[in-house]
Length: 181
Image (cartoon, rainbow, N blue to C red):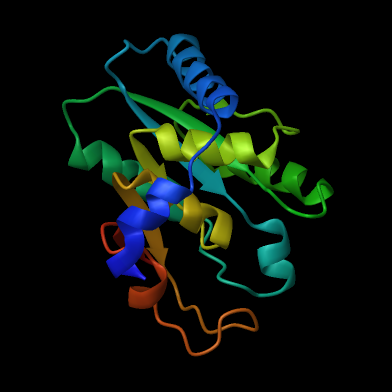
């Protein structure tokens, strides 16, 4: 649906309170991380709990750190503020395991979103950040798609129970750089 992407992005917008709350969270994250106002904000979406349970678009443990390293190499003169959000599961207990995974595997300082953040606010933070590191799931996809800026996505096989006969070129936004799994 790339031919209709501008229209889709114009229709899928956040209401003013959600937009303001997301922008305030991003500004607060920059202050908390000690970065100057011009630093690059990178939203990192970690989703693993139910993905492994259903074997759906799982990415290797080192993907997120490799994606962070790639952004740092791509923009060597920038300072970064990383915001990590996890989950968005129907079973909110799985969100906690995603946050624990992030603590173990992401080796740069970051500001986490609160565990019980409403999902629409996490999505708004993905959209209003300067860059997005996507998970393999649909929530990360929409964050990268609506952001329409710098994006890194996993280049992992999509043939699962959820996505049959799909290929990565059709699934991931074309402006996203993809890291091989």
